[in-house]
Image (cartoon, rainbow, N blue to C red; front, side, top):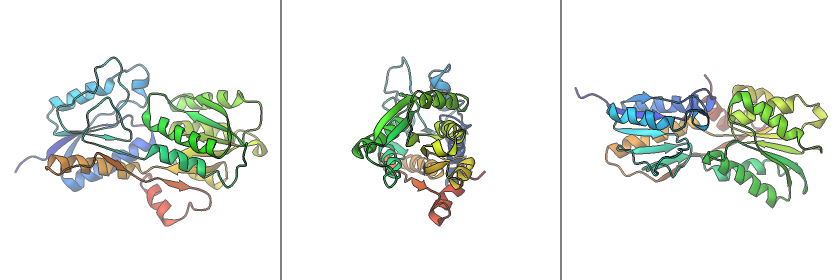
Length: 294
């Protein structure tokens, strides 16, 4: 019997619930499509810190071990001639990148999703409302597009962006970064936007510690189980949730189809859902959140 096709997976982390959920989607697709996985993930944010270009070493290892293709969540490269041409077909996941040649990119439409996050506030914010936009990293295309989408919609609404600051990437640093950013503005904030799981976690801790009457409306991106309780208590106003399980499944499916000679779409977008106190029990919302359950 012929051995199963072997494919490589290199994500951008493994600690965040987002990456864990994406991994489950990839594993399910591998099971359904009868392929073997070789997975290597750097620690979350490693290539933004001390381990520059760590993913390149992982990709190299995989190609040498005989994988037929690779699914990659690309971290930014430094001091490397780009675009890097990997010798096997590659599908990018979660974010686009000009650093690699890829057959397809499977992502959220991040600019549109950032706009969606801002529009969730439209019914409750007046013109001239004071808002804070927390940023993740200038090198990460997905969150940058999200932040820019939010900012574009906010300016169209006539809201005033009084805080716009990079607050860090890792869980242990974002709370301090958010606190510093928000404390730098002396007036009352009407709303705060956090563009990913780690910044959302930091923002939630900071906003929760404020007196209830002073809290801005907090709109976050991505999902952690504790965000459900924060939505119920009204500390989080809205959460724009991606579907990393579906993203993972589709990315592997796209790669395997290409290996079997089927043409692939260059861009595949996966929808988001906006979770609020009012709709958190809707079946469509529960279906997406169920993918995050451990």
